[in-house]
Figure 1 (cartoon, rainbow over the protein chains, first blue to last red):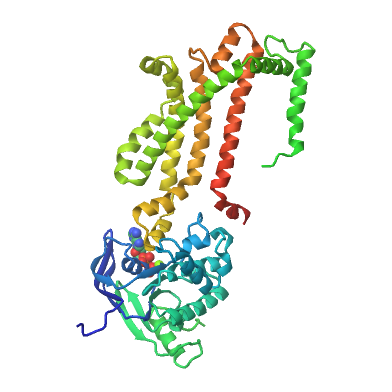
Figure 2 (cartoon, rainbow over the protein chains, first blue to last red; figure 1 turned 120 degrees about the vertical axis):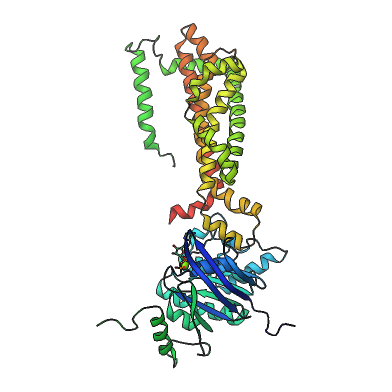
Length: 239
Length: 252
Ligand SMILES: Nc1ncnc2c1ncn2[C@@H]1O[C@H](COP(=O)(O)OP(=O)(O)O)[C@@H](O)[C@H]1O
Ligand SMILES: [Mg+2]
């Protein structure tokens, strides 16, 4: 019997070098079942690289890393196949006779029950991204890997999608690694924050703010300032 | 692409001017017979069955050549597009061979396969091969790698990724290749059929030239053109059906 419960992600000493440049230089990471971990870092700090490694899309990474259970990925761009209707995109790679039912349920959960027969080109950016979430959810993942999933959306759509993410998470209880460069988003959605800097996890912060949360809960601003400092951003606009 | 009646005005006017000029004796009937005489010849040769026979013969050659060249182009283009080894082994010789003007190969082909049926079919196949190869290759190469990656995270095997992502993604390029192949195929047929032969539209035209039946030469030209037009129309229709997912893209 293991002394600790099986983590959904266990990684130690993950390294990735691109032609002489070391992007990841020994990353240690553990994500527990049902835990949402936000991964912050400056642009180019290697967040996407780490996520792709965990998604099994990078064959050249070294170190030890395992993910437990099923996983699904949502990228910054929706990455829907333009030649498949929305429902076919969601059902992509889903096996078993109940696939159509599960597809319908997933689309309903993201509020697009009516759009199953639409082509991706007929959807707005926000709708497309919701389909991408449905495509992930239909796999009933133990782990969701999210690479700036709201990054390409306009501000209002982004807020709606963040709320949707909160609801889906409460219902399904998946664990998630949420890559983002949006400090507020990270504080709103995660249980724990990691800051990636110079190829390592430079900082780890527990977020004990309760759920659901808003930007005006006590303690939010302190955390926000601390994070911005870690990301080398002045917290207040310069005079 | 709907046919508007206004667009018919100039073609009809041109035919009318041609007819008028021929009737008035401005055009020598030996050089360019009036459209009415061409129509008359078409009617006569249709009734005695010879036009249909020659047409069938030509279409058969074209179809066989397109099939052989097209399948070969599709296969080699897919091998070069999908596999790195295939690319290294197949692409360089094909790119080099592409520089040869294939219609200039006629003398060599005559030495190799003779002046008979194989010459015509080989020429059409050569003409069709390159556009299909190049566009299959390019279509596969230009697939958005991010879509393939997304399909991988959805648990699709390599074969499934080819079926659901690579092939449909290469489809627009493939259709372009098909249309170019048809155009090149007809052209090759015209050239091939000028070399000897006992049947086919080209033979019909060469024979008519020997007897100074200019109207049949013109008729042959018109039939060739119609074949090209019809095949292009059919391809466009097939393309619209197969690529209906693009409709949204164009509308938005
Ligand atoms: N396929 C690649 N080839 C070469 N360099 C890469 C590749 N992918 C990422 N990099 C480099 O690795 C660094 C980290 O990239 P990335 O993980 O995308 O950063 P982030 O997502 O944090 O913005 C960048 O400097 C980038 O240029
Ligand atoms: Mg990134």
